Length: 284
Image (cartoon, rainbow, N blue to C red):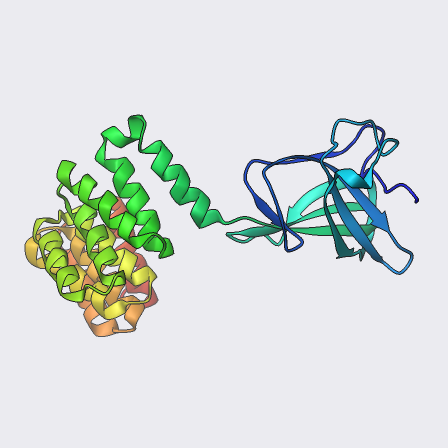
């Protein structure tokens, strides 16, 4: 049978997977593989991963050593002078490995179970020095929350973080995890505990987090709470103004920015309030 192309020049081209992968929809164990291609005149082809990755080129290629052989569809691309590898169409779990040469592109889809890998890695990391501080547990729990994976494990982690640091940050993560696991009443209780001990900066950051999620009313509620607790903070009033402005409530936004500007705010806060005031037509 004709020998496949070694996907490069001279020595074998090698691809190494640190973790199990799906290649063109087929499972491939972690390891190193010789990369080969079969090319047909109709722009179809095959990608081959050979367990024999040490041989020179394809001279000793043996199909019995194939770990994977899968169909690919070549693409026409602008002329590429040098043979080039790249990763395109990246998302959280997948990417296309592409080989570009002359006017052809050889695409190979790679996918990884990223959430599983991250959670497994977190478990191992927390057995080491990372496990002796609350930040490691909090970070792992927050990943579980943000990605909605291993939620019960996330609750265990955040409880370990809270035992070391009972703060707005850790309690807020626990509230989110409780909410995601269907424990709404418990989530609300923990949320109230978190709000009760939140600092000005923590409340402000939380308000902007909600604003970034387009939860305008909730963000404004948090910003208002911050101005009630810290009525002499120009930054708190500036943030409240930004919350109103983002929602489209010009009247309350202008009033909040005026309040901020009346307090002789720091330059960065002053600049932000004045920027919004100009945008709202309240300052020339």
